[in-house]
Length: 161
Length: 128
Image 1: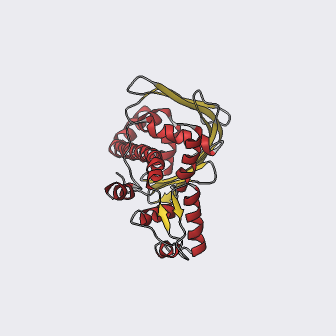
Image 2 (image 1 turned 90 degrees about the vertical axis):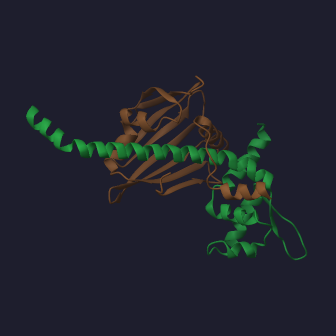
Image 3 (image 1 turned 45 degrees about the vertical axis):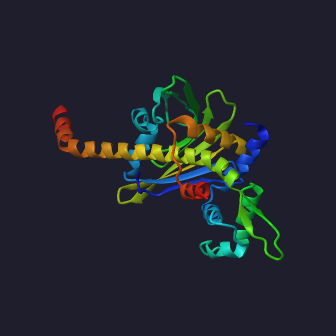
């Protein structure tokens, strides 16, 4: 896996998740990857899934949607609205899981980190902590089974004890 | 999952998201420790700061503090940790995987751009 900086913070008191990730590409290219369908299709699709529908117009107030099909045939998707966008620096959009009444607000900020690198900072604010945790639970099950990372050593020492 | 379990898990889940608290949990996995022991591994954090982190872990049911005379050792509740860390880690892994795909894709785009540069300039000139 990449040795690029990756921070994942789940606030214990607020329904917020913040992620920071460095990538080796200039900001305009990263912006394109986040805002153009032909690019999104290539990297945002969860592993093993197929993107079957996607619409995105980065202008303020415009709706967006995406829908995927899992290998078992089940479909899921997300939709929302662009709240604000300033290329190539930041956008804010609402984020709703299809069939769910709960709306989250996601802000993505791209910072030029020099030397052809870009820092991606995302902050997602959910309606409540319970909503956030449901989304996270779903997010974790979306694609292939993930491995343990941060707590690997801890869990290992527990199970071997 | 029932609602009570859900709420309990919410707390544990948030508690584990913090790096300092993960350090504390990692230390406690080796055996109980006093708050002072934890201050020693806390990366320069003050005792009140460490106590605050321990309180968050305690509210989440991940640790408990027993009374042992004047000592109040902090002890890890392993079962709760296993429950809570499973989905947090799954989601984290999912995110890391997505960013790794973005890495690969950006690399592909940039190498394509490099190898195509001279040609596309020529084509553009001819068409104008």
